[in-house]
Structure formats: C-alpha cells, structure tokens
Image 1 (cartoon, helix red, strand yellow):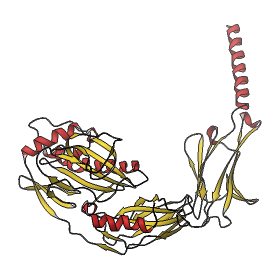
Image 2 (image 1 turned 30 degrees about the vertical axis):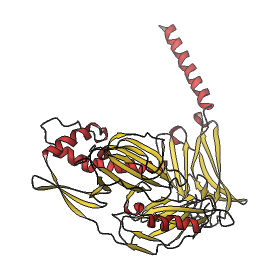
Image 3 (image 1 turned 90 degrees about the vertical axis):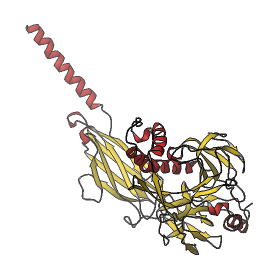
Image 4 (image 1 turned 180 degrees about the vertical axis):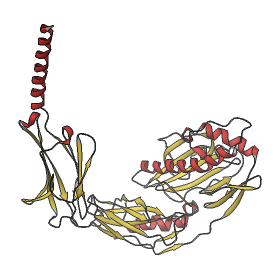
Length: 458
C-alpha cells in the first residue's frame, strides 16, 4: 500500500513538472490583421484578431506607422475608440475606424499596421511575445470620371448604354441606377483618349420610379468615389394589366412536373387528386424569385467584350400573346389568389417550332430552370444576355458558340406555360428588360453603334 502511494506521488510530481515545462514553452499569441486589406481612404476599418489562452494578454497594442510617425490605435487597459469583442474563450477581436475622417494625420501613400501582443506563461515566470505587420496604401484622391458619349434616353423597363472614361486604371466603374449597379467594360480605343475608356449597359427597371437617380461612377479599393450624371430624359411606358383564369386541368398538368424539378422548394411533388393550388402559389411566387436570383447570377459569366452585332431576331411569324411588364392577377374558381408580373414576351406560332438564337453569343444555360421549364440563356457580352423559356428540346449545350439565327431548340409548354409558346426576354446585368428595343435596328444603331463609333472603338 505504501509502495503504491509512493508511486502515485512520483507520478503527480512528474506530471506537474511536465505541465510546467510545456506551459513555459507554450506558443506565443496568435495575431491576424483582417483589415485593412490593401487600401484605406476617407473611411476605413481596422480588424485584428488576437488569440491566447483565456484571452489573457499582459499587453496588446496596435499602431499605424506612416512617414516615420506612429499613430496609436489600441492599447489594452487604455480608453480608446476601438471595439473589443470576445469571439470565444481564447480570442479577442479589435475593430475601429481608421480612415482620414477618423485619423486626420493620415497622408496619401504607403502605411503599415503593427500589432504586438504579450501573454504570461506558466506561473508568470516569463512572458511570450509576438508581433504582426501589414502594409497598405492610403488613397485620399477621388478617381476621375467623364462621360464620352452623347444623347442618353431611357425607357421605363428598358435599357441604355453609356461610354465614359474613368481613371486611374484600377478603379471599379459602371452605372448605378438607384441601388442597382451595372459594371462597365473596357473598350479598345486607340490614341491618347484610349486608356480608361469603358462602356456600360444599364436599365431603368420596370419596378423602379421614373425619377430614380442614374449616374456613372468610378470607385477605388479605398472606397473613394466620383460620379457623373448623364441621362437626358427618362420616358414612361404603359404597363398592361391582365386577368389569368386558373383551372384544375392546367394546375394538374404543370404543378407536379415543376415540383419534381424544384428541390429548392423543399416540398414533395403533390399526389394525384390533391389540392394543387397551394403548391402552384409556391411555384408562381417563391420559385419565381429563386429563378430570378439564378438568372442574375449568370450575369457573372458574361464576356468582357461584345459578341453580337445588329438588331436581335424575334421568333419568325410569331403572335404576341403576352408582353413585357404585364401585371397579372390570377383567379381560381372566381376568387383572386395571386398577383405576379410577367417580364418577357410570349411568342406563339404553332407547336414545336424551331427557336433560333436572337444574336451571336455563348450559351451559359441549357437546362431546366424552374417556371421557365427547359431554358436556354445566351451571353452576348458586356452584361447583355437573352433568355428562351418553355422549350421542348435543346440543340445546344453550355459553352457552345452560336450565331444569329442558329437553331437552339424547339418551342413547347414546359414549366409554367399555358400552351406551346416561346417566352423570350432580354437581360442586362442579369435583370430582365424590354426586348422591343433590342429588336429595333434604329435603337441598336443609335444607342449602341453610334456611341461606340464616336468613341473611336476599333
């Protein structure tokens, strides 16, 4: 018994000794400078993470160094503007504003963040210290932007294009309509006026006010921004209202098929004989919004150069069954059950007619797409795309290059369609716009070709 007790005492002493040695040689504090990233301007943010056992720091200081001067930003235990958040047991997060507005002594040019942290080791017999630095640029001058093209008129629900010059070369630029931004794309222009010349397609969406602010902008990575207004006038366009009567035959045909293709709705396909109205309303509302987001995401796959020429092609010999921005009220058994806005043209000829590409481009979607059924989307470059819905079949696949007039499939009634027709719409920056303008050779010649020619685009 005494022997066993002696062994236990030895093990305890040995364990304490090992713990002392390990703790004494423990890791120094871990430091991460999350922000600033590369630049700070009139505004900016400091974001630093510091990790140590129990977040116990003997000292934790953060400073900004520039031109031989040191600007204190944070010191634990001292009064300051910084916000300190305990992320977990061992980690602190320190954040505060560090732009020119908060640090008047900042000057344009290079600067550095320096973080130093010290924590106690086992029994405070020694201190463990680490440091981290991050270089960045202070940018206080706003970018410059100047409008190059002339005569800009936009229709409600329609599109326009502007040519402008933005400097320096690394700024982000485009057009902002209300809270929606449309990116600009560099143009190949020779001569002194070439560098920084870009063009942006944009839209005054059907649900934006006619007096929504529209301006070209140039913004650097420090958040400095300049803008220029340029639109000469915006014109109202009438938006139709229509009444859609739903019946069980229609619901029984479209609802189960769409449900089978819509796992994102997280609902089981309705069984035969069940009430089809609730799932229809979910498809017509929630799925429609999901599809709009999916279509908008495809705008990121646009080519930075223009892939098309001339007016877009309308489905030949087609009858217009529904137009753009048609405000639809749905009725079932005499009772209003839903309201939605139809953002395209429904074009009908006969059953299963060939559908052709409206202009040259690259296929970015050739698959089932919710309420649009079998759907092709073609990218025409610079944020411009076209959508073809309710198809029976595909004659193209994603990545295919197509020419204007090339067959891409056949019409049908897949998706949320009452009968065989083509749902066609144009997209600018992933948002649906009135196709009528794009079918008009005079509109294309004046709103696009003239501006590019006058800017000297090669």
